[in-house]
Image (cartoon, rainbow, N blue to C red):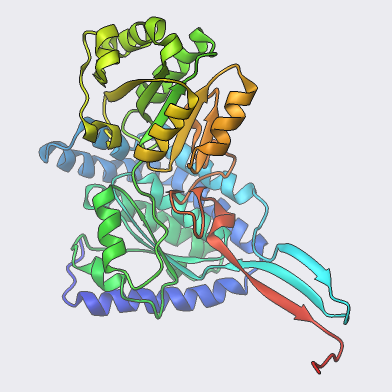
Length: 422
């Protein structure tokens, strides 16, 4: 671990180097950036053993520090996950280049040609916690969209992130790109973060990924625009006209397939018309799987194993085998609950009623609304983005899973033939 004496100077150096690399990236073609991504994927595969050895250091520290099972799962990097990381980079490489895309174009009556063209944001700083795949995903998406990036991972994955960063750096150099286009922060000192967040001269946007406390701290400290990803308090509403077998399958998947991630379901809402059958049936399966249920009075009457839910339970992102459960009187009550307590991340309805599905999708205020499928599909890879920089719960500048195109802004290019304004 690098010992850095002057954190403010180090942060400024990172920012200055990133700005210089960004200026060079703007002038590179998509073909060269794609070549760099393919070389990055190859380097990750070639260095799989090195990455896993570095990851073992982080796992040993995680065990010694009594991190939760969910956190350790996020942190773990085995051969299969290294392959998934490399494949995700290749998926990003295979996508169309968003830079230079003409979003809209038209000719005015005076002959001026107006074009709205996608351009990179510039320099993106990403501050994140345990998952090491964020390092490669963020680097790949930033490069695809022509942005330089500064990556500050959590101390839990420090050795893994540095090893991935080394593979990325070698890949960039091998194709003639400035390795400073992707910079890994080489210290775990938390005092560096406030210094980075004041570098609005060099950094164009900050994207924090992690717990709500991290994100709120970044928003409070930053003089740079922040794209926020708050909690994933995701809901599944089991409508009165649902297929019961499908509802059981989807609820169990949404909650249990990987409980420690932001798109896992945290609250299940049962329509009163089907609660008598489905609360014991689905709730019982959750309990059998080791999931603690915290329910309303009606839920507890139908499922004695459920504990009493508090007001806070409706707002909580558990990231664990705990779920809140409520019986509601119809679709409007379900929507009211979700819009009151939800985090605007991902919410689902399970129904065979097309009108109900359309009403739910229109009324629920969320970045992703799922109809008859698991909330676990709310993900950049599952949406065909190859990877994601995060799942934004903001409405500006991006919303939901963010791919390469979401790391661009636009400029107007106006072409004339000598016109003057009178």
